[in-house]
Length: 589
Image (tube, rainbow, N blue to C red; front, side, top):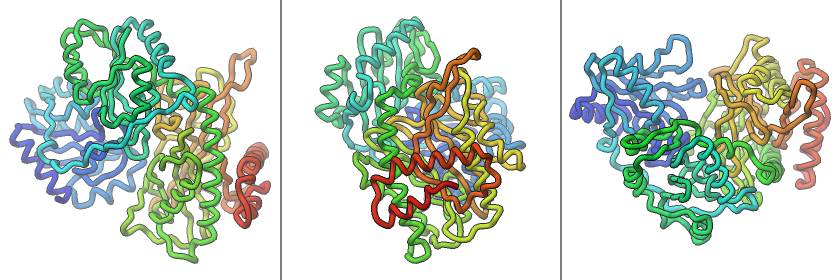
């Protein structure tokens, strides 16, 4: 079926159920960013494969709302689907709820799948629709339309040992119960997959590139329950649960168990799916708040930070070997964007404890570099030669930590404009790397620092500057970030973030430079405690696209010091021509 035929089939189901509009969020029952194959409903229906965005279908119209990362990608993937693109966050783009209200009659009905809809979204939808006499109903129509879904994985669930986690399961449960006591709650529900895995020091591979498994946790004052596919738990995982006094129950028993909970005060994230709230709403009181383990997970302990430091050397060695291979072979041997990504993966796979990629590599040559989350396909991928720039955004999952790095380089002649823009982006990255900031600072307050060199030249980029990164966990992790949005979460010691400003010229090229950084204490003065960033990533930048005159003395010193550190960390692991090439690359600017 084409996307157009799928939408037509959905409309038939809408008509049978008297539904005037149906919303397909990019979500699963755990509100994951990256979804198990069987829950990729929006991608299946629309053909749009980005990690963010949702579709609204009415009786005669359909629209996809997505953010600036996908404004270039989405039109191509939506072509012929009959689904219009709505650029979320741009002036003139209607709010999707307001758009629905304008398209359906008073007294109409809007359907969603409550399992794949957060409670926060449900509440907002309900209030706005109810005010216009429009009903919101739980109606999982795509179950009838998309019948040949992917199979649930049978990959094992295994232990992430305390030697790498830095904190035992019992210690984590004790800390969570302490927060429960402070909030005077008696039951706590954990439904987000990375929080489930972190709490129990377990890992899996039910979601591509994310070492997580499908599961829920219920914690009470005296008991804890894990709901998952018990057949997938290996012997050590079962033993760890038994030793931690955690009762193991089948995944499909979770909602049945919820229905037995009565007269309790339940701590639950408003981002949990609506079906959980429906199962608990009779006889229980909700405390809707961020789950305590989420913030604990974000503040990496010293064991986890040391794991990051170790894998960054390993990853840096793989990147240097890859970059040498790429620069020496582009234009001489046949290669394309997809094959380059596979080659990069093979270099990482040579490293100790490599598990897989932390996300699908973004290899954008020439104009594809301007597609912020570009994904080259195995068939029809663009040929890469040596006459333009290439953007390489990639990362690895290792047993000790997670990496995410972007380097943009010239494989051939590039314009002076490109070099200037590349330098401005690098300047923003360096400035954020150098900043000192007082305790209590939020990511939004630092976002400007990375953008300022571009802003001073009338330029900007349509994505965040930084996201949280997990410890052998999801490459995108909250609650912190560094972006324009007003996120109230302050940056705390131990938080790991990306530092990745960019600039994109649609149809020509894209530039992004990215390192990972960790929050650490700097000093305490009469004005209070100040923090700084430790740069975790070790991989040089290419000086042939840097306009030295743009950088300040301090910025040049930072870059030279950074390259000296890269040399200290990486050179001992290189030899021969690769080492000679690398040593030239890290010479002072």
